[in-house]
Image (tube, rainbow, N blue to C red; front, side, top):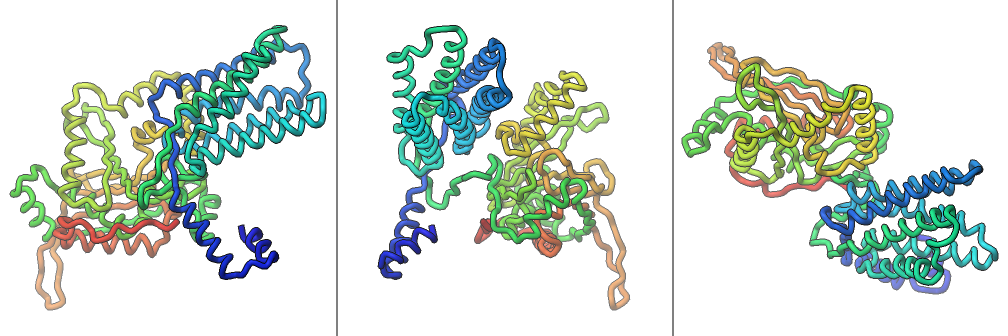
Length: 499
């Protein structure tokens, strides 16, 4: 962009006019942000993915029928289109709802396949025209799914007209079996692209809404302007388990107990320390949004205003009762009562449900897989998670994905523990707090005072923020717990994490 403007300057445009032009262009683009997506439950999506998979299968059958295939042909005319077709089908189910632009990557791979085929045409002119056409389609598709073009109807023509031409006019699906299979594979992927474009929905972005782009995940946006030390540290400290810091803290709870008693008297049954702690943590994220970051694929992301809290609970307080995991979604603007209501609703859903929860069903399904195959499945899940390809419904069920994992040792009557972080998933903070303890403390004047404390252990991923940031967060949480009435009023401001 800078080079273009400098070229304009060479033609005699005044700098002031050039600056106004640049500002006008920038504002025009920013005002016209669009979000394009494909609904998750859509017949056209299923048919598109089916066509893409069938295209890959037909290509495999065609390759198996060929007597001799050179290595370059094998890679560029067999492996490449198969990978592009299957990748496109995978993207439809994992990214089409909120990151449709990711489907542009397999489409460009497919265009490379077509470009290689173009070099086998009879004339140079025909080859050049085909190469220009493929490049135009790839650019058009990318611009559309990125929201730069206000409609997807141009894609209907880009994929529909060639498909109709080859089927109705050239009759490409007739002739020798080998040629029929090869052309069928091409026509199926074109049909998949046409069906996907028919399912696309375009809407203008709302005021202040973040528009996702390449590099973002379905559970967070990538932070691109961090200091170099933060950008490099995930590559040097590769795992979460080897990057964890351990912090032990104690909080005096005289005011907290009075606050809890007042809440219970007001009708909040079983309102306790857990709800206040979660409310204080959510409020800390409102002031210190870096607390809601996570590491995935050696990159740092922010969850924004989505605060996902995981907790292991028992349906019954007995050693025989199985564990299950609940996930509560909070907002940094939540009050203590909001946190209480959201948390209790999830707990009661699990305890009152006669059947297993979604997490239990998922764990049960994995348990049916034989050990060696399960190891491969977990490896595949880790690879998909690394590249941000796990579907959102799976990360919502997973206890290893979230903003915070919290456990209350007070319900078990024991002190808090240091619980390690999980390398699988992306939870960056694990909090454990224990039962109340009493202490007699000597004051400066020699008098002895009786105090009550709750100890808490934090295990944090040091790569998301620095030590000073964590220290500021802990001081702020201390302040909130010492004066919990602050949690009855929503925060004046919820700060956004940096870009």
